[in-house]
Length: 421
Ligand SMILES: Cc1ncc(COP(=O)(O)O)c(C=O)c1O
Image (cartoon, rainbow, N blue to C red; front, top):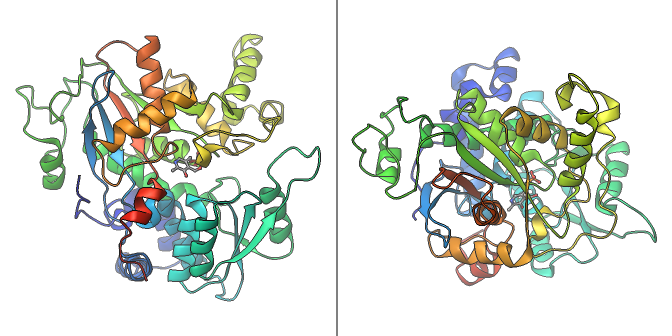
């Protein structure tokens, strides 16, 4: 797989973004938006070696059969997180935020690296709250990008992420949140809608009788020759028609939310069944989902979770012990944006999947054979969910399966480091 020299997502899909509408409402011309995105992209590329581009969709061969994967591992800072943070940087520009105000995030991994890369690109100070066990290589890289790092420690008996606790304190003291939680930073969700918007174009309609646009030559290259029914699917992806099953790894929930919203804004959510994926070893979303189903079972006509109010919001509880799994990037104690994920899961007729540790590792290994840069266990956790569902027979045999390979294997990256400044 090579990075697709496609369009800049925030230019190509701007008309579907709230940020673009906010910019226009603030008096920006279309041209000013395109120039601002282009300049930001160049600044990001000057820090990271690459700007944001449409990422490829590739077939991945697995022991359970083929799946389609959108590959984010070659994205800015090695994951899809840069999409969220690019949106936040544009939000600062549209809001006219003063340059000196400190930005703040709680993360020890992909989100922090993306935040530090983008903050560096726009020359703004960033504070990062990291846990005591943060990977020293990541912490060094954050420091190299100019971030101010604070280690947050869990107090005895405390539930919930100590980094998030400290982040809230910093925000109360005046810092601006620069984080991938939709509740704190709605513009972070907007930025990653580009992923769903791209995917909608790249996959085309799920219904074999439907039509797909054939005007995207980069896409046509990726997907290969059209089949006799006029579909452009990679050969041998096992599609037997019907809805496609989308497996998305869930940590804080922003990725699954943004992907579904992007698909919906492109008019493509209808043919998709969403499966949020978490690690069997730590799964606050799935625990809350089960409570939600029980709550709904007691009601005649239960409302959408997004409209249900505080009683349903309170069904999310912090994971009771310090979460541990090979999928380190999705170990949030709390799925902050769980309500939209639950809502999309219900609306699409989907259900969550739990992946065990062996399957998480297997998924990373299988994806590495087809996708470059290879994902780590977090980046391949959606694929692990797909492998689990196929193995357990909970999705129809031959159903089309789509996953997101979201984050690079950092040890592979260290050995093949792109030229970064
Ligand atoms: C590589 C990777 N994939 C997926 C996720 C999950 O995204 P979210 O936290 O938005 O659910 C994360 C971060 O949490 C991540 O680092």
